[in-house]
Length: 219
Image 1 (tube, rainbow, N blue to C red):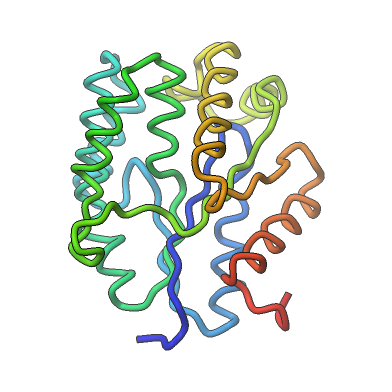
Image 2 (image 1 turned 120 degrees about the horizontal axis):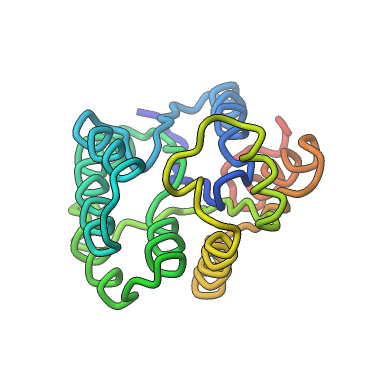
């Protein structure tokens, strides 16, 4: 087990924000500094959660069903991947976590935020935290205008059901992320995803240095 502090870091943003392209780069930098790193994603990360991901991204369902499946996948992911990796001293980099559920199901789909609060408290209760709720140590929020994200998506792969949503939906999702940042400013780092790639990456490095994730001597 590493003697260094391990971190749980999440990458968030609307579809097309460009967050995913920086996860592997950060993992590589952390490994170069001697850290053990686990890279994973939501929904997904375990065989069961990946099956639920396929349903969530492709099958029509109401917002309550989406939320229940999302948290079911998250529970399995926490128990089988995230909590064991943290217990072993790994830093965990996760492409999306609960902020995405609030942003997409809560704000995008208009689902009851109080029910999401209840599910969050149930599902993310952690034995390692003596029953406290597992939250990221740092959330990198890649913020881009919905119009820019839509243009990027139009040039990418065939969209899933969320990526195919209208721009107004993503505007609501973006507001959901902004509200989550207002509620937890200490763990959020806003990344301006509308800048050139190198400038975006520098913001990621700076945020990780500010939170003690990266050693300054290696940046």
